[in-house]
Structures are given as C-alpha cells and as structure tokens.
Image 1: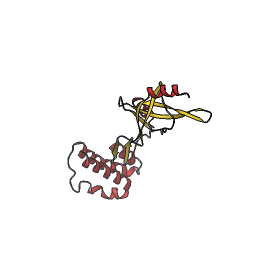
Image 2: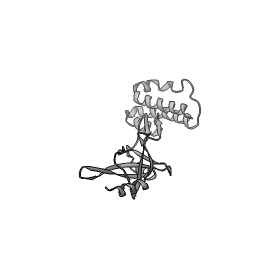
Image 3: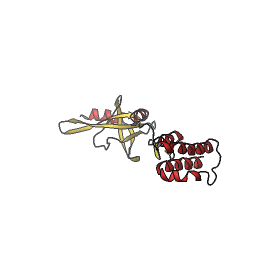
Image 4: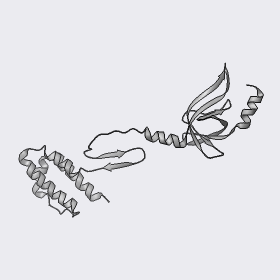
Length: 192
C-alpha cells in the first residue's frame, strides 16, 4: 500500500473505543468502508464479540467478524463486519430460545435472562387431576376437602385452625396431594 493510500485512509479515520467484556479497553482509528463494514489500519486489537463505540456519535457497533486485509504476508489492516446496536438487540430477541413444556406442576421458575416468575403452588385443577388418580372410594372425600380450601381461597377468608382436621387421615395417606395442597395454601397466603 503506497503512502498516498495510507494518508487517504488515515484522513478518513475517526476514533472508536473498543469495549471488550463490557469494559472500555482501548481506542482505535477506523472508517466505515461500506454498509456493515468498518476498516482499520494494521496493528489494531479488535476481536469478534467486541463492541466499537463511535466517539463522534456515541453509537455502538457489535463486531461479529474480523478479517485481515492481506497482500502476501503483509497485513494492511482489517475489515470488521458489524451489527448496529438496534439490529443486534432485535436479532438477540428473535434468536432467544423458546421451550414449550405444557403444564408446570409444582415449584418452578419461568422466564428468560431478563425476567422470571416463580410458581410455588398448584392450582385447584392440577390438584383435582391428582385426586382423580386416587382410589375411587377416597376421591369424594378428597374433593370435599379441596372444595373447602377452594372456598377459603376464592373468598379470601383466613383458614381457621383445625379446618382440615377431619381430613388428616386422608392427607396422611395421600402425601403428594397434601404437599400440593400445602404449597397452594402457602402460595395464597404469601402472595401480595
């Protein structure tokens, strides 16, 4: 590359700050070569997944490809393929993995990297499904017990001590239902 070309490139360069691992690392000089490409001089340190902060505008560009400009064994600089910050964020949102798992029974954390919902309880329909798996002769009593709890929850009435005492033998026999019911009651009592 002749000195006129180097002077032309240097005159058209502007200052960028390299951001690596969310930390401002160092400054480089570069210019926009064409759409989605920035060209640098040789001997710069820019890596894929770095961000370039254009000092004049404050805009950020995500570097997703770094290619050397070579002639034989001589490096004349680098071509940096970039995404604008807006395009990067849009692509990140559309490429977020989505998993559908149907009904969640029991405690679970549901969400993504930005927000999460904690599910500590079981809803009444889920408990009824569990009851339907119990022996037929016990289903009626288990459903009566669930009706009592559902009435208290729906009417937001405090549960009195001993209200479920007549169902204690049944709950001892069906520990899974007792646990699910307890989680639902606790979830109701602790929600804001």
